[in-house]
Length: 483
Image (cartoon, rainbow, N blue to C red; front, top):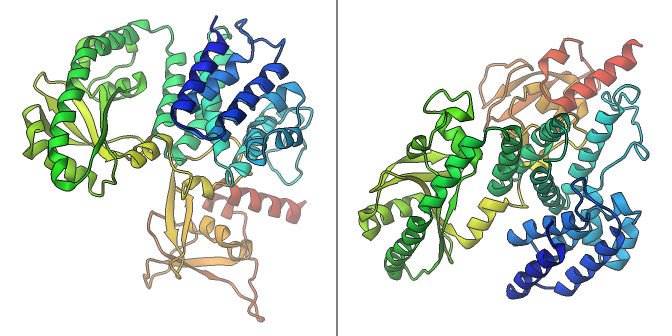
């Protein structure tokens, strides 16, 4: 059994060392949560308070501010302890209360059916409708306060790491929920850390009986630990010499092991590995096991080009050879290098700010802002950017059609859409035409004698649209028209 007070005290010391603001509020939040969760226990027998403390610890390690740490400590007090968001706002502040509200689950008792929602079948599928509503609420609040997403990510990471005592069907249900909602949300926020940690958490639970692969990987990483430390020192020395001419300074060299999910996925590209037990320790030589981050204090503009120069023209070239370019599942680019011992690494050079954004994601300008908060059954993780004739950029799901785009602009445009001109082509494109990233679309509508949009929707349009929001609008329209 872990001592939650020791975990909290360690986290508090780190916050104080960072000179974090309002550490006193973190202490206050801890004692508030400790009191409210008193007498509550987790399924494994631990006092419940250990969960919010460990969630807070995950976020402290990712350098989130003290309001987010407080919200992590308090995140279950409304849902499980009868505390109100108004009480949290008066006791702490509005920001903390809003974050906690965003991650507070909707329950069967406070679920309100929506007659406009075609998925709200509360008779037979109440559990699914409640889950959908909980995430719709998270997305709705998250558009204005994205910190709630990070509380939810850290919460799920901790739950996945403590799920061993649950029956298999409950584990699988938790994995599926994570894959439908949280992993796509982490991808939309472009958070490399939470995307791969959540994906790996699901991977490890799903393959918990395949111990050989994990044992081999742990042994390999452990055997490499001394070598990795020497490599960090060598790289740091060579980079310091390189940077002198540019008046920039090195913050640190970070070398971190990839997750088992990343390693297995990479190995599976080289041979048919239908089972983890087919992966041997010798296979690890064929893929990068570590990420190397060269972190500068100042911005890096042409990171790969400058990194290429560093690795080919200066002392580091004696240690490494560049063999290619790598792209991860979030489209982050890195150089693939090999050392004298034939070990492979993915290496990136970036500023401290860029490094933080790479791992945590960015709160501004993400595809989260394009999400429809009434979406049900999961999140589409892939979006494209298209343009109006006035060059206004609009984000829509990757498989969208002209009809989806028209409804995104306005319902009247959607219902009256006849065809479109794409990328200034003189040729007409039908409304079922699939759009691609960068397309410029001019929708031509059917107008009546008074120059007003004329509704020309037909049942077959349901086959022309790919977005859930468009489908919902059309289904409700035809229900009213024909019933």
